[in-house]
Amino acid sequence: MFSSEEAESGDTGIGLSITEAEVAKVVKKLLGGRAAGVDEIRPEFLKALDVVGLSWLTRLFNIAWTSGVVPLDWQTGVVVPLFKKGDRRVCSNYRGITLLSLPGKVYARVLEKRVRLIVEPRIQEEQCGFRPGRGTLDQLFTLSRILEGSWEFAQPVHMCFVDLEKAFDCVPRGILWEVLREYGVHGSLLRAIQALYKQSRSLVRMAGSKSDFFPVRVGLRQGCPLSPILFIIFMDRISRRSQGMEGVRFGDLRVTSLLFADDVVLLGTSGRELQLSLDRFAAECEAAGMRISTSKSEAMVLTRERV
Image 1 (spheres, rainbow, N blue to C red):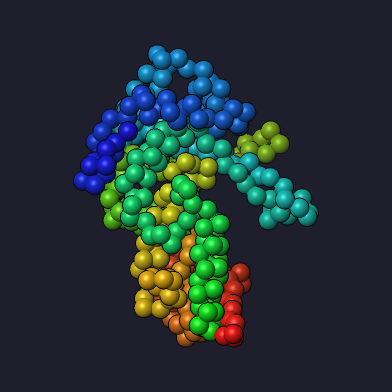
Image 2: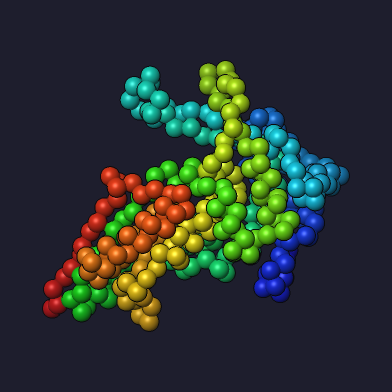
């Protein structure tokens, strides 16, 4: 889609028109049987498009791309409450899923691929969430090797498992745009992303009834293909800015933290080190509009006597 030279020069996705090949690739991967958004367009409708239909869809995307304006339906979410357990009369016993416009999600996926090509080389190795070819097993393996290496020299490993309060829902958008610029996302691509948030709104649908629309002014869009990559960029800057001289040796590296999206473990060789690391991380989270849940965060010390 784009060359490595374009990625290195920072021109990837900046001012380049959306191609029919990009759109067709995303549409081909759509899964059928999914619920529709406010516009009632289902995956089957888009998958049934012929060459002419895809051409018109691509043309629509390019109008949005060049103008920096998207249809209001693309910015609208339908929140459907799902009962978890307990008393059905208690609101906290429900969780909401947000249904978005499918054409808007296809457009967002095209943007996501362009964003990822720019920012992926800039994200630290410590982050394994929402990244191709990486998963929780990578972090578990890394942590186990860190423990084994430390125990070999009878060194304890101090850890703090940090929980962030409603992380996705609390991302301040003004700070997010600033972070994206720092990571090389600007021009037409940044404007296209911002357009999806400009008049962001939702309604609640339950038992066949719908609420009035209400504005959504903070947080990432639930269910949007762009949200995962935007979030890990946001978290990466917090992680970078909070790093100090603390950490645990891992080969030739000093590892201060491991991340999987919003799941964070801070590492240190002593309680004092860990506290310094936690203080800096908490300060950076606060500066970025995020809050640590003290009730859900836990500290742990693992040690083994040298044999």
